[in-house]
Length: 288
Length: 288
Image (cartoon, rainbow over all chains, first blue to last red; front, side, top):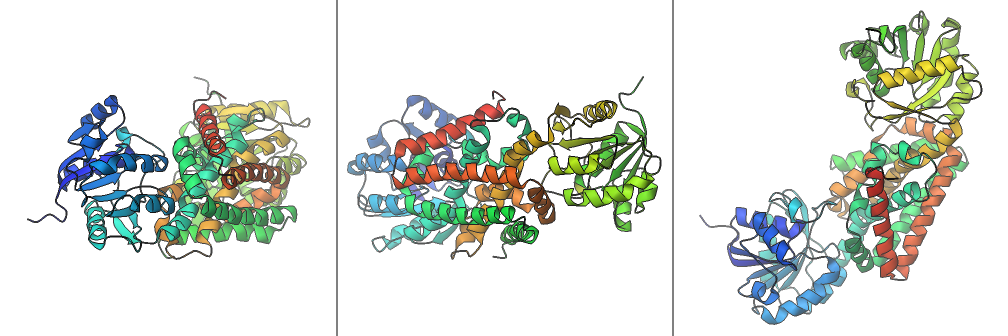
């Protein structure tokens, strides 16, 4: 039987939740003859070997690069450029390079100038949990995966990366880096920013007894605020303008609510909640 | 063995998620010799009998009131006053009355003028799901339950209602109606309002492809928006001022974030996310 994807070596740079899950799935599905992981610290190498995320783990970037036919950059967005620059001299010139960064505009511009066969990816999977301990082979099953080709993208490399994501169970969607960044600013970065603002409002300078009156609704509405601060600093820095526009739109909706409250406008309040409920319900049923 | 609570008859007005759960738990723990439920429609009477939420269900408020030693009002906040007025002529003068409304200032003022032995309650339990189909006997176990006595409150009635909640597994906390409303405006009403604003921002007037880029983070951050619009219209109307102040505080935190984004201030962004993560983590571990 021919496998859809059959690579000599996949190298994963950064073996955390996403990198670890990619390694586990690639090994389980035998998408490569060898999966090599690059990590920063020797104890991480032991962890990702123990988790079954890679066949080989190393803290030596040159060694990880050697023999790689496909490299997947899975570090936080802010670390990609410096690592890519160190990686490049050790890589075969025909190696395909992709990444899983949450922001594509800045990342794609930086990385496609360094690698002739670079293709930007962003799987819409993950969690506020980080680290290889939370990795799982089925993380990408059923998830949308953005692929962000540009005019400079090698079409064979794009097809290969698309096949990889499809083999992992994801649904590839081609979109420009800029359009991608606009969409995730709203669906992903805005919820994170809001979740954190809610924590500050409720738990910062708390009134007496406030903690007693925070129940499961509050806990769930602030779950995203548990993510890594350094990661979210980098993501929001890299997607400043679309996120700022999303924040302004949200402020408009909150101002509308505030106005209805001031006017004690029962019909406007009911409409605000009812229309929100319906929009979400249609989305859950995928009618929009 | 003496039971902590042993009432001749508990009457539950409105047998939905909260009323149904109260009925199930009261029957299971034998807190009353009889649990009677008042519902609006005959098919609801059949449903709450089938669910085991009450011993007897009726659409006749006078009949439900007859013989009640304790009445628990479990309807949406906006329906409490008219129902209470219809209920009063049929009630024994020594009957204790409580409610489970999410707002206490307006509700307590209205109800304590109607019933000499009224005590306001608000169990911090529930869900965006509604209806007796989602009721469960253990809903209140471990939940904080606000009790909101005023200068007019009968102390024996307060002690009886407190014993009831304790018997149901809840942790009673005494607090003034006004202080209660300030706290829940932040911990409960604000998350609901925000969750709905997020839905409007992301799913209203959507860009092409937006729905594809909404994943589990967005789904969970908007879960609260699935609540009943009529219920939330009433709650937000009844708690206008505290909620407006909470919205203004939240807007202040979002403005701070926006400023850090505009200035590309990496340190301020990291601090915003890191401090939020820590505040929530301390709250989860109950260190604050």
